[in-house]
Length: 427
Image (cartoon, rainbow, N blue to C red; front, side, top):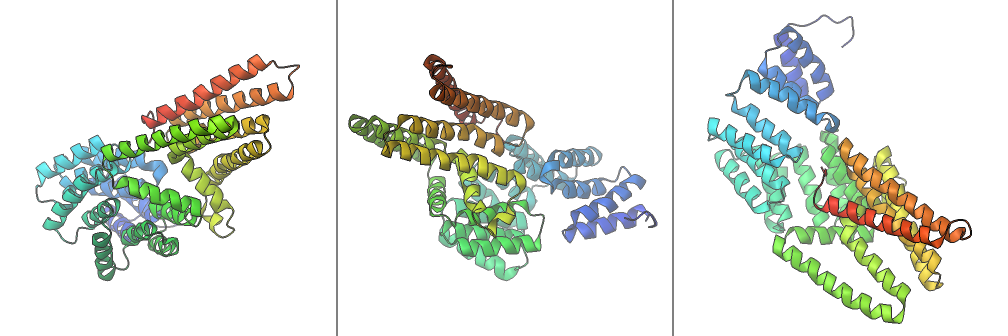
C-alpha cells in the first residue's frame, strides 16, 4: 500500500485480505492481513489466512508453518487449522507429522472431508498410492465437491496407472470447473503418462494462467519441455512404470537388470576392457539416473530457444553443470573407445562421476544438504583434476598420486550416492 493510504479497520483489512487471497493475489493479501494483525494480533483467522499467503512461496514454507502454529495456539480446537497444518507438512514431506495433524483434526471433527483428504495427501507424498486413494474416496463420500480430495484421488489414480478411471475423473472435473488450476495440472501429468508432451504443455500453461504462483505447474511445464527429447521420454515411461509396481517388484526389476549387466559386462571385458568399462559406466548411470535426470533434462531444455525462458538461473546452471558434464563425459568415453585411447576414456569417466554429487547439490533444498553434497562434488572435481594432471604431467605428479586421487574420488561418488539413496538430509 502507498504511504498516503488510510489504514483500514482490522475487520475491513481482514476482509480485503481474504478476498485478495481467494483471487490468487497472495502478495497483496499479505499486506492487508498484516495490517489487520497489527490492530488485532490475536485474530486466529487472520493468522490462518496469512499462513496460506506465505506458504505459497516455497522459500517461506517454514515461516508459513510457524504462523499457522501461532493460530493453533490461539484456537487449538479449530479443526481447519490442524487440517491445513497436515497439508503444509505433507508438502514439506514431513509425513509422520502430517498424519498426526490430520488425525487430530479428525478427532475434533470426524466428518471433515478435508481432514480425510489431508491424510490421503500424506500417503500420496509417501508414494503409498492405494492408501491415498482410499482416504480421498472417504473424503469425497462426505463431500463430493471437496477439491483437495478430488486432487488426491486423481493423482493416486494416475500413479497407480489406472488410466481410464483417472481420465474419466479429469474429464468430469474439467467439465464441472474448467477454471480449476489443479485439475489442469493433473490433466497435464495424465498427458505426460500417455506420452503427449504437447497436450501436457497446454494444460500446465493453463494452470499457470489461472494461478501464476502455482510452482508445481511450472515444474510440470518443464517436465513437458524435457519430454520433447526421446531419451527423457524413455526415462519418464520407465519412472511411470516403476510407480505401478510394488516394492518387491521394483527390487526384482533392479536385481534383474543387475544380473543382465553382469553377464554383458563380463562377456565384453573378454573382448575389450574399454568396452567392458563402458557397460559398467552405463549401469552406474542407470542406478544414479534418478539424480541425473533433472539436470540432463534441463540441458535439453537449454537447447530450445523458446522453452529455456521457463528455466530459472539455478536450473540453467544445473543444466550446464550436470547435463553438460554427462554429455561431454559420454562423448569422451565413446571417443576413447573408438580411438582405443584410455586417457580420453578416463577423462569421460571423471566428468560423469563428478556430475553425480553435483546433481545432488542442485537438487537439495536444505542448507546442510547443499553443504554435504557440495563438499562431495568439490572433492570429486579436485580428485578428477589431480588424475588428469598426473596424466598430463607425469614428471611432476606421480602415477601413485593419480591412482590415489582416483580411488578417493570413486569412494566420494559412491558415498554420496549411498547417502542420497538412504535419504540422508534429502528433502
